Image (cartoon, helix red, strand yellow):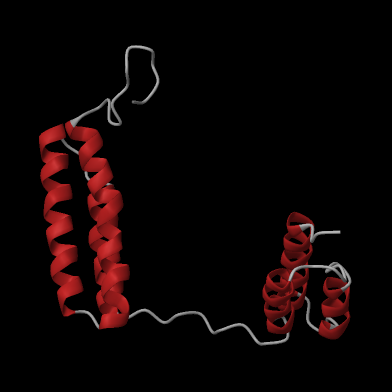
Length: 146
C-alpha cells in the first residue's frame, strides 16, 4: 500500500503545530503517530523524506529572523509607495522612485538580506504594470487571459 501523502502531510502539520504551540506536548508520541502512517512497503524515497520530517519534529524551531535597520527602511519605502495617491502618472512615478530606492538600500545590505529587500520591488512593479496597462494581464475578447 503506498504512502497517502496528503494524509501524512495533514497529520504532520497538525503535529508540528501542536508541538510548537502546546507546551508539554509529548513529542515522542506525536512522532509515533506519524510513523504509523508510513506503510511497511513504502518506497525508500517516501521513507526517507517522512523520516526527516518526523525526526525534525523534536528539534526546536529556529528563532524568528531579526531584520536589520536597512530591511525596515526598505519596508517603509515600500509601504509608502504602495499607499501613494494622486494621478496615475504620480502613482507610477512614486512606484518607480520607490523601486530605485529599495534597490539602492539592497546594495548596502548584507548578502543574507539583499535578495529579500530586492524582492519587495516585485509587488511595486506589478502595481506599476497594472497602472500602465489596466487590462494587464492582457485578456482576449473571450475574457480569458492569453
